[in-house]
Length: 271
Image (cartoon, rainbow, N blue to C red; front, side, top):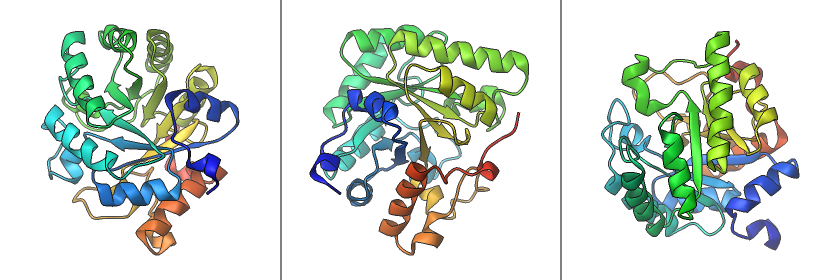
């Protein structure tokens, strides 16, 4: 990796990289050891996700994760990260009000995050605006939002049907207008994700959202093929089986994302 490629990734860099045709690579991470491996492999963004509630804490959802949990793991990741931009999740109900979100986001930035991620639109638009006005970069998350698993009745593909598709397109416009600098699309039909990405003024990161997003994200444990006690999502590829080592798997993931060979058609959802 050249010196220019080792420069820390900043929030403005995300749009510049998109405009340059660079596919953004993102993985979840929760500790210093893996963070160093991801950073050395050239991952652009590291997500300290509330997915830790399932893959680290062993829960059945993300709902039990606290701000303190995310802050602790963010500090661990930040201790070993030199280049990648660290994105930290605002866990369940930490963003219920703008003031509450500000307290949580401040704690996460102090722990080493460079951006916070929150799920949904609707009343969350005011939260996004409130945070951005106070110099806190925000990543929005639409489609399958795991914190809404009880309302959804499970982990289900989003955006099927004209009404659902129109709603997602509207929400994507709204979060960008509210000031979000990045948008994660999860379990969204591939044609709809392509449409949203084409129209979006901010970069999109897909997970189970087809190949036409501006980047991709996976849960680290999933892409390493670890048995987490649940059925592996169709959008996951076992990179450890191909890479031969954790470092090799992460490098293979970064290369596949940047080359556009991952995700393939079988990793996405049809309309």
